[in-house]
Image 1 (spheres, one colour):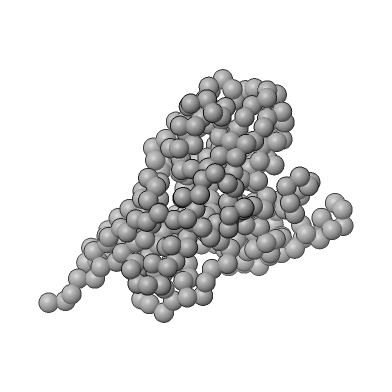
Image 2 (image 1 turned 180 degrees about the horizontal axis):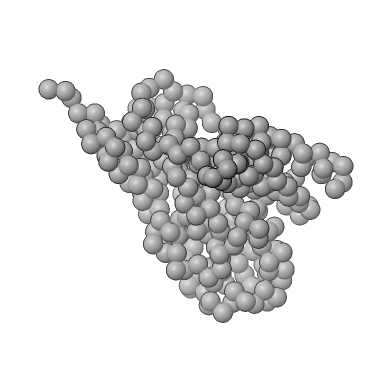
Length: 303
């Protein structure tokens, strides 16, 4: 009798991370019922350090360090991440294997009182730990303060409900996955706020050289092209957790055109530039690099 194959998926312990890992597990079970899938939850360093901004304590790598170690020690076979939380530099021995179909990539503002969404001139306290969000929010709410807020989705919502903050900004993808989309008081279109690279996409990571053919049905071609373009853009600009850079790509299914929009800001407090490029999905990485280099050149020339 053939031995049953068991795939262990490493995941952070938050409710959202567990939902995401279980989503991938269901996809594997559906396409390959002969495979048994188990979740291996763990707490990462990034989940423990909540009183300081990520860029002050090691960046996005704090969310994946323990998961990477578990893969290397073969305690897990896969890791599931929100792609926006994955560092730009990926270890050669732990490649990204697949990208799921994209959920809503937009950001949303959640207020303690829904009437506050119209008070764009008020002195509001809108909590965020993202410089990307902060510099774009300043145009929408020019008189607001943007103090640091950390923690998972539920923790941030509780801090707003308690009155500690007037509002906070969360990814619509996470709200929808948790069934909390009705909490979004103002959904920000990409024209108002460009999202983080990879926002709304789940990335599946594994070990180099192993057989992961069972992931072929999960890997979404459009998401892959969008992810590659966005990450190539950010990588050229060396933008990670703390840099206020942003990128959003979209594949038009009818024309097979890949439209990439990007924002470049060398550091918070400086002016930023936005630009766009169009190409085809197979040009994704080149498109990202070209747009990034163009914006850097424009910035240097004082555009």
